[in-house]
Image 1 (cartoon, one colour):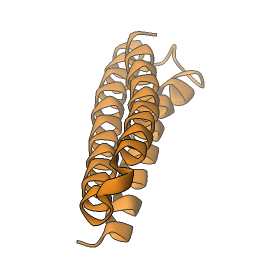
Image 2: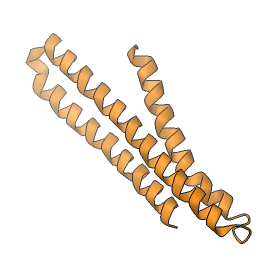
Image 3: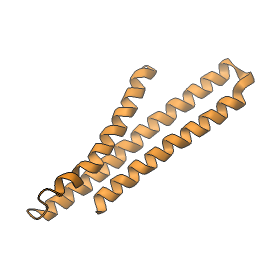
Length: 111
């Protein structure tokens, strides 16, 4: 699978994960009195699926960043330090976004 398709797949997992995490809370606000147990179960399921998909998307993204960085260092060893620093900063930003997505999924599940 080429890198462009893998990037789109990672973005798709992250977006779908966030949608699953927050959609049950939006639907529960409409008529939560009708079936609170079903609404709570749907929120738990959506939060769990959303958190899992967000982590999968982040894992794919960090893997791509690491792989590209190693390939770049192999091609230009003289700038390996700069590439390593940029890779670590980018991976930390991806990890931070994944952490927020996971926490959002957990908050959707607990509400």
